[in-house]
Image 1 (cartoon, rainbow, N blue to C red):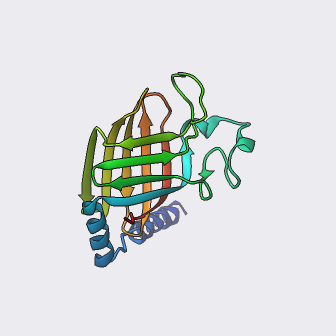
Image 2 (cartoon, rainbow, N blue to C red; image 1 turned 30 degrees about the horizontal axis):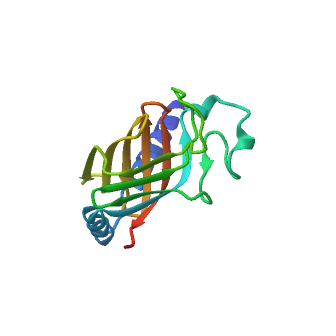
Image 3 (tube, rainbow, N blue to C red; image 1 turned 120 degrees about the vertical axis):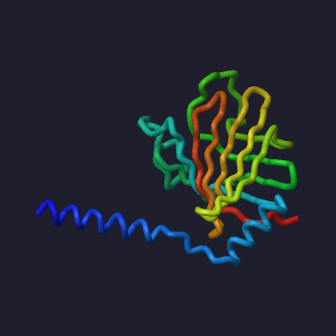
Amino acid sequence: MQIVFRFLLITVFITSTYSCKSTATIGEIDTMKRIVLAKKIKITANSATPIAFANTRGLENLLPPGSNVANINLVNIQNHILVKGDSLLIDLPYYGELQIVTGYNSDAGINFEGIPTTSKFVFNERKKSYQLDFETKLQNESLRMSITLFPNKRSSFVINSSRRTTITYDGTWNELED
């Protein structure tokens, strides 16, 4: 019985590994490369996953509809990251914990407009995805952002802050219209 279970487990693992293989077409990959190299990208988050909320209870009523503490729905909440040439514009809601409180204000999101301190764009040939890394300095904190763009217009990104807990976002990306 144990041998049958192991065989079944190995079969499921192999099948899932091969089914996760990238099915992106050459055209989709070429389009993604063209848009990224032109540095004209608009990224919109559909959901956020704050690391600090995973073990927090009682906040569910403060979150947008369709959300829970592990996954916050951002579909009807305006947000974006714009990459336009060397400039970066970030307007994202933030759900998480402040590590160093500097005072309360009405803008608790992640906002930046300007040229990042560092930026790096790398195409991952094996995964057929683009990795965009940015570092920025805000008035009271510094941010490190790692964005992954996939040929099917999906995106995933992580933001690390010097004053806030880490948060991840999932969403979509498109070519930025002029």
